[in-house]
Amino acid sequence: MNINMTLIGQSITFFLFVWFCMKFVWPPVVTALEARRKQIADGLAAADRGKHELELAAKRATEALQEAKQKAAEIIAQAEKRAAQVVDEAKDAAKTEGDRQIAAAKAEIEQETHRAREQLRGEVAALVVAGAEKILRREVDAKAHGDLLEAVKNEL
Amino acid sequence: MSAETLSSTDYIKHHLQNLTFGEKADGTWGLAHSAAEAKEMGFWAVNVDTMGWSVVLGLLFLFFFGKAAKRATTGVPGGLQNFVEWVVEFIDDSVRGSFSGRNPMVAPLALTIFLWIFLMNAMDLLPIDWLPMLAATITGDSHLFFKVVPTTDPNATFGMSIAVFFLVLYYSVKMKGVGGFVGELTLQPFGKYGLPANLLLEGVNLIAKPVSLALRLFGNMYAGEMIFILIALMFSGGAVLMVAGGVLQWAWAVFHILIITLQAFIFMTLTIVYLDMAHQEHH
Image (cartoon, rainbow over all chains, first blue to last red; front, side, top):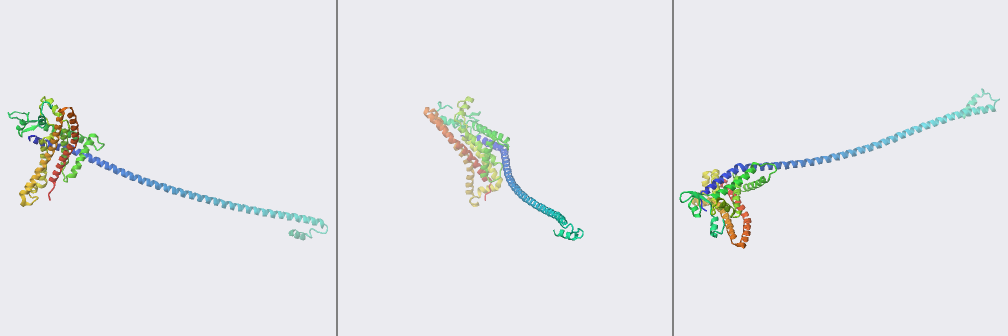
């Protein structure tokens, strides 16, 4: 346990080791650590950004879905309305057509009736004239009583 | 060293003697073969074992850390790099916590101190006779002195603490100027009329730093080594003592793991604090 040259040797060795450590050991390790720290921080930030974007996308998707639903509902409502309208139109058209046909039929019937009546009237007049001719053959001059006969015929 | 041929006192003395190389009384240079001879060599001698082991351990530390530093990537770190980064971050945190100035030297200095002292202390955990016996076998000198724990040699601890002391002086002068540093030593705490008292107080304060730094480490490691030696003595005292010695050695070694780490950490932290004080301007 004598103090001797070892003291100085130890000091010199110490300085050499410290110098080496300062030159070749510490800086690369600390640089690598710092770089990795930055990488990790960047990665975490990127992850956060991604998460945020995902949230936004989900929100957008929900909005789009809602919009689509709304649109579909609108379209359906419109279609229903249109269908009802078509039905109404059809009803109206049918009714009009029916009325027209009824009117036509009525007119035809009336015409028929009129014609039948005219015909009957003519026939009855002819029959009356024939009957009257038979009854009044001698007395009645067709020419003289023509006016009378015509009057009778019109009265029928 | 086999204990049968020696008395307990001899065994202890043998284990506390460094392998010293220097000029002998007859004028030739060589290894001392007794404590007295080593003492006679005076200051111009070298403790070969202390120097050798401290250099080997320091190189070991620098080799592994240098290797990891060379291959340091920002990607997924491997085992060695992981360990190195863990240690570096721990040291970096300690330095950030205690050192307020800006000096790129302090953190590597702290790392070197911590790991070097830790490795030197850790030599204490090896069974006390293994390396000395190996050295004795290799050299063929069964009486070879061989201390494997450099920090049980005050030369080593004082060597480091004096190096730290010089750094403290250097940065004190660099940061405050010669005038500032001298002023700090002489004008506090009693003002300029209490100059002698100031110088005495601050001088003691200054000198106490390296002395306490070295003696704390040396004292702890020397005492721990001493207890290992005493436990090792039990191995020659019969079967019962041998078992008891084995248990004790194991227990003390486990406890010693704490001590060696703590002492390395204390040396490092105090160095940081002293350098921090050197960097601070006094108000």
